[in-house]
Image (tube, rainbow, N blue to C red; front, side, top):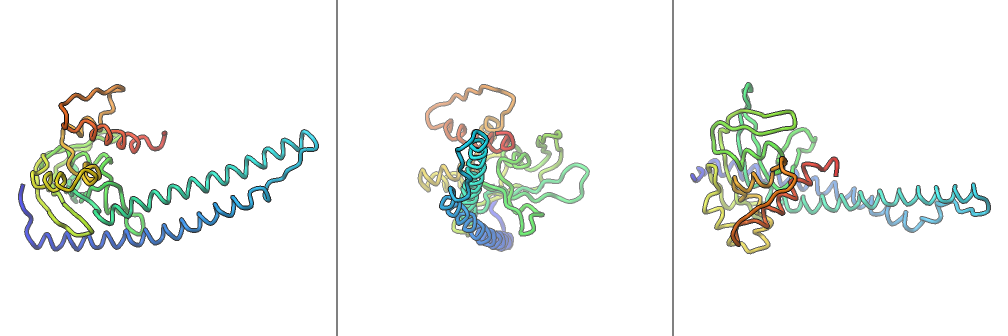
Length: 259
């Protein structure tokens, strides 16, 4: 594990500030949007029965009443669900603001001339125009390179097949309160300094930061999709529970379109 030159440190800190600035913009926009949806929910709850046609005189009228109630309930449910999603997104953005990412790899795909600069964090973040990834979610296929390979030949799996290439750089960050506290160029394993930093920060921080210290063997367990039943054995304190929780998080992300 190699320490990074000061000039790189300065450039990376500047990038952190730029990313945090984008996060602030998204937080502000989302708060305005969430406030509007929240007001819609309150208004719908207040006027629910005013917007429902109630007539029980004839069978046809009863059917119309039931349909009107169902339509209004579905509208309210959709608004409440959207409001809940926005609140969850806000929580994630606030976590990203404190520590935007923990890893960075430069990957040159076979046949390409330009390297992909992949910064890895707990969630994905795109730029203001939603055109470029500023941060990749640790569960995305390309992020698996960070856990599985040292700099050199590497590949990762996508639904379309295997992507071959070369990892040019692999770097790890310790970021707190939007400030870089540590930065190292590393091989395949997580450096002792990184582990000591995470483990010394207390149990709650450890669970929040566990995706930054996943080892290659744990990553294989987390991303395994070939086995319907998976049994993980290990001694006490070997990380079984952490791996299981992150496997659940990965599978929920991987199959979010169908679950």
